[in-house]
Image 1 (tube, rainbow, N blue to C red):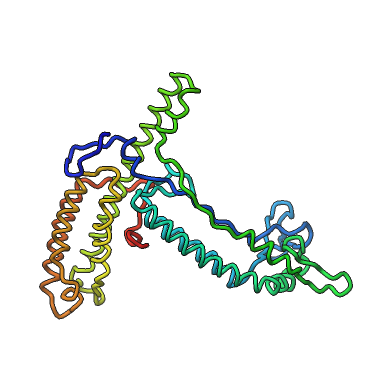
Image 2 (image 1 turned 90 degrees about the horizontal axis):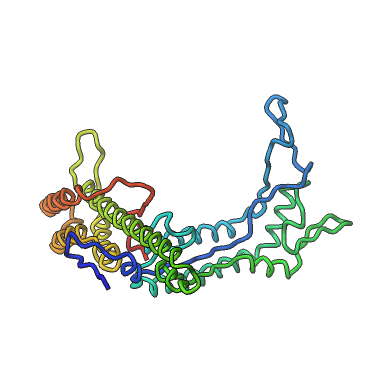
Length: 342
């Protein structure tokens, strides 16, 4: 196995070996759609000053599930995705939507996170199902002629009175539309090609192995560049918060959390450095020495200026060392604020 030496600035990891330290986590969120296209003729689109658009050219949808309980589930899913993104390696478009490339060391922690989030989500779904009949009744009132019982599980309209009711089984059927599932997949593409080699021509296998290796090398380069940019972002935010306010600027407030985020990045770096980035590893060691000498209490005390001045000077040196190895951001992003969020 060609294991890269993180202290060797010229070390180049073998993609197949590097990716064996990772796993792809596939996560699937599902919930019922909140909008539908109404039946023809139930909604008329009017133009300004009587200039009505052609009915076949105008597209209209109606809002079905207007409820805080439904919005809460969506917000919870968004926060869960943000937590997963914080733990995942920045592989960009080389990983399918809904999948996350994780360091092996993070897998059990992320599974624990997802188990907690799934339990919390189930409680939110329970709350939604309890008010589901009233949501359907509200939709009937709001949508008027555009209301269609078929759009709502278990909904019925009494032909005599026009009253809208929901069969008890309807809410339970809706509950089944809310799912959160996840499992691990193989991230070593070369291993997959070799496993199928007995059934494939030698020429095909050789070509696919070359493609897999090239793809692995590109992915590692993307991860390396994004990790560097993420760390630079953390350093720059801390430096900016330590810089004295210039004339015309309002009062600046230093937040110790800037230093805490750098510390979180440093603590997670060994597990996340699957690209074997020796250059960044050297700068990380420099930053560790800087942060090790920091007293958060002294930094938080606005009356003590010297600790902030010393830290600002030290971080300037880190930034200067980091600048030459930064590659302009392409399509790979890793938000500095999210690092170490779980």
